Image (cartoon, rainbow, N blue to C red):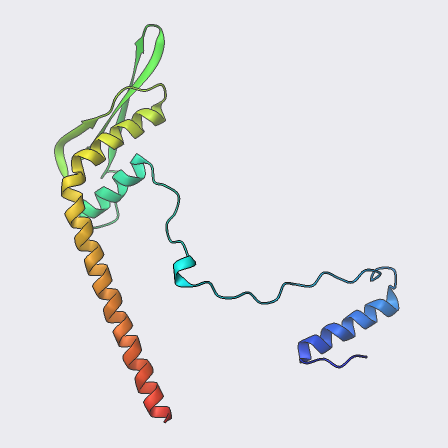
Length: 167
């Protein structure tokens, strides 16, 4: 029996010895060890950005920013129409945000697939709404940063109070 630094290591050593006694052929090779505990990543190394957003995702985000809430199916309406050009089927989509502006319709260029037609219409809508969404998005970021700073200040004050109480 070998001396171990922790109770867990001693238990593993005892289990390994029991297995060796019962099944010597099973433990012929040294078992693979788990890697040592990793180091914490620095905040700069952690990426919070996801994959690049397509036009529909940007449109949904813009609609949420405009409405100030999560959207429902009724908030972004996409209508796709199918037509023939020289014997080939083509699609054209239009996007409307009826809860924001019932009179605005954004039509995209025609495409080979329904999905691409929807993306084209969403790109047109995002471009049309960019001037309205940008200041709202900046305001939201500033508000979020302010709340984060307040939360951090509160946490620091609480931490200092705990340190003072210990001393």
